[in-house]
Amino acid sequence: MLVNMKEILKEAEEKGYAIGCINTPNMETLRAVVDAAEELNVPIIIDHAQVHDPLIPIESIGPKMVEYAKQAKVPVCVHLDHGSDYSFVMRAIRCGFSSIMYDLSALPFEENMAKLKEFTKIAHDLNITVEAELGIMTSTEEDSHGGSMGWTHESIKKTFTDPAQAAEFARETGVDALAVCFGTAHGIYAEPPLLDIERVKAIRAAMPKETRVVMHGGSGVDEEQVRAAITAGCSKVNYYSYMATAASRHIREYLNERDGKAFWHEVEEESYRFMKEYAKGVLTVFKNGK
Image (cartoon, rainbow, N blue to C red):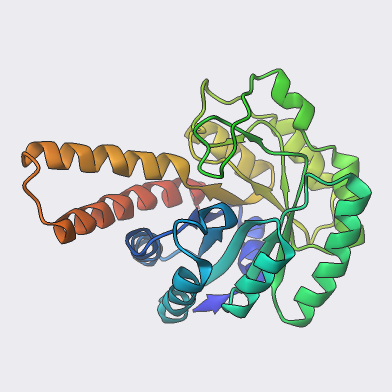
């Protein structure tokens, strides 16, 4: 069933688990993620990132995402990931997306807050939930979101979200979810990430109860830290890069074993099967033992 984020994130936080949010830029990934959620009987958020639009336009994949959500046996939120252009955000709404991340984190704090306040009023009138970002999420050289900024454990601290600012931002804008920075990065990590779990706790305590805390860059973080972040208050965890690269490695091995003798439809189905099992493993971690 197609839902927005608000109710599924509320239940997730109350029960101490997180909803997985996974990019679905093609049909194999879309099928794999939704089927994984159904087999585990958990809610799921599927999203289309603005930076993936050159690969497949939102008008092509978006309606398929919405249709899969409507037919699913579990609650499925169809979400726009890192929409930074207002025109692109409007394209997602026209496609029927039930949730929007309007990412203006590159703007000064006051401007980010003012624009999100205005947009959230419009979105809520349409029963669309809104996610924003505060702090600038660091990107690695192999970032699937198009970034190329290097990082170290020390340099990344400059991007961390301030709990007091997070509280003010959430109160003023009325956003349903806020992506915050506390040690994760988009893409493939050059060294193991070290999360500031105490900062997550401080942000959760400072923000209004109805605003949920979001963790981006979840892939590549060890299970223990992911579970700790969820327990500290993250009820939505974004995941994609490591599943995508693992699928590529698997298909390379699959083709090598067959000396390259495989039909393309067989390759597609193998990638679907691999990603479904991979997604099930990820979503099981996000259940946090619940």
